[in-house]
Image 1 (cartoon, rainbow, N blue to C red):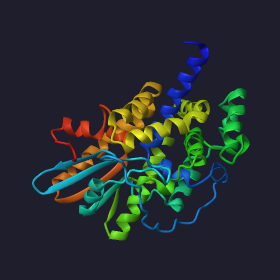
Image 2: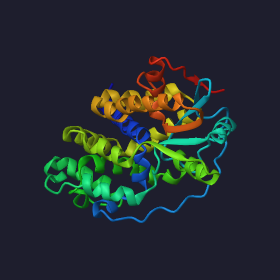
Image 3: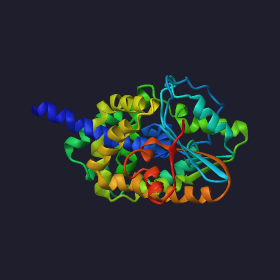
Image 4: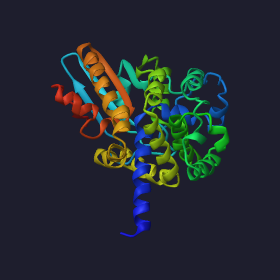
Length: 328
């Protein structure tokens, strides 16, 4: 393998670390609503208007994977999502539509992924650190790279300088995807949330925006910087990698999701893997067991990275004696 090949492989691995983050945290869709410059300015945004339900192109074949958990008086559906999608992505299926229609309640990672009024004060509180500017944490070469990448997101390195590394990394990881036609409004959560609201179904969240912000803001600075460096090195490859991952998701290729969006994150950053996936999957499994102890039909939709691999929500539940089956 040549040096050039090794560098390309390294960039690809880093891109998958970033994609694991995009798949693994609902906040990624919320961040995509605001350009980097808006975060740099910490502008207070108005609440988003309620979205109208939109049609989704029908998938060829059976579409994305859907799991079901049942007991005597409960049926719980578990569906993996992608937080930002192209409007043309074909992921609709009669199987998922029927499961969603049958549900009494709908659960997402967070109940308000499009609530900019809730997001911006948290950004101001946890995302700004003027006493430790990025220019004091990155090398001169990295600052040049940051300025180049930031330009594609409508900002400059100087504008991003007061922001903490986790926020810059998350914002810039989403920016090239939006530029390539990925739209947060076409993300699965917002599509399903609009359907739920139109049908009068209660919407719940396993977490809050506060918790997701706190999770990233609470990472050690070294891990935040590693995340940011991953974004800077893999920026140009991010869209190609996500295209591959979306194809795997839309065709129900769970092994592909694990390979592209989960394994590389674990290899590149155990801290990110534990914080974004393992700890949260464990918490959600407990909440799902509580729902199972009740009655009724529930539809749950969380990032697809949470439903792939040995530390997935399903594996944790199976380890606790809860049967989880692929819905047919």
